[in-house]
Image (tube, rainbow, N blue to C red):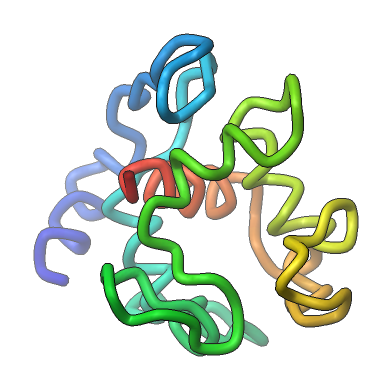
Length: 138
């Protein structure tokens, strides 16, 4: 947590983009991730307080072997996201899953499982940060 505040205080809230793997790779994305994974992890875990937002950890585990809480376990999501919709890079799939969760639903999870209001809660930068963090979960 202290590292997060140091990064933000030093004006380094947007480090160099994290590079995704090329097409056909495990992550299935050729796009650079424009967010800050450290900040994204803090958002995901609820360490960075955002009005009207329940942390992602309310419904998602990230640890291998923990199974399902309410939504899918995010362990390995960077790899799975690039394989969910043919031709859609992982980063684009993740963005759509956050902002428009009904656009594509995972078969084991019925429509309406995911919170529908994140588009009005997160800034573009915060969305990029969360996606950058999710892309580290290989």
